[in-house]
Image (tube, rainbow, N blue to C red; front, side, top):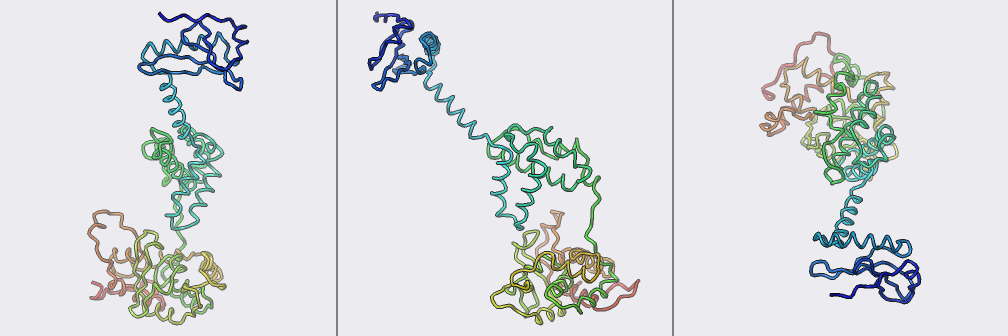
Length: 412
């Protein structure tokens, strides 16, 4: 039977100064360790399974003799139950570190999401728009919260005040918050359902945006005013005026015109190929150029070292406000994007060109997946006939009630 250590008093323990281990009694294996530098701490020497363990119980005198004996007794009880206190402590520490690694504020999660996603966004302004809307509406409420603690009542507190008055903005905020939380769930920073989810959750609590906010369509030129507008436009000087004219003739978005480069345009075949990276639908778009559009291009000046067809006064790309400014100087209330609507109205109301041909000209995405699966080509030559007809229309004053343009055999 092992020799039982003498049970030292608190006073006797306080006098221990010689380096080494001194058994203090009270609990088998409990000792005070004194280092050469004079630091003293409690150690429980115990056998755990087949392993000898020296288990630290804290520094002396921060942990008193009585507390050390209590801790030692509890530790021995764990060992008798088949628990290895050292491994148990390691697992607990590992779990704590793992939980701490998951901890992230909503603001930080949003920053990381924007940083990860923004390189793939076509418009560099999107990142700033995300940052601005979240900073204005979300961060005051949940910005500094651990993303695991963001709950549905927080989301409703953010959205409810602006849902009726700023519906479009509120809808974007909701979508962005939902995306941030989805990012956090995917990265293991939180688990469970997304409290910002619209379908099946917030749609039961907030009114549908489409039924609250009136859709504000881009102001478009009435069909019969297009020829007069075109005639006025052609009398105006400047690159921006020519860019607006080209936008009207091609029915493209103004951003696609402003970003057009000479290497995208083949003047011989009369085709402009806009790369996918510059298209809203992220798909290459071929634009058939009418003879009028080609004449416009051939007459344009070129700037050495500048790739853009329509360049700014100091080189580089025209600003997004340049084309709108031309329309304002023409005292028009419409906007450049509305010219696409004018083209669509003309094609639908004044011609018998097929609907899908018109939609292709506008590079609209086909929402019907079945129809999209069967569509292989882009009907370029048929669209060329349509764009020639459109160029002819914009140059010819049209009386109200004009007859529908006949569809040629080539377009049939």
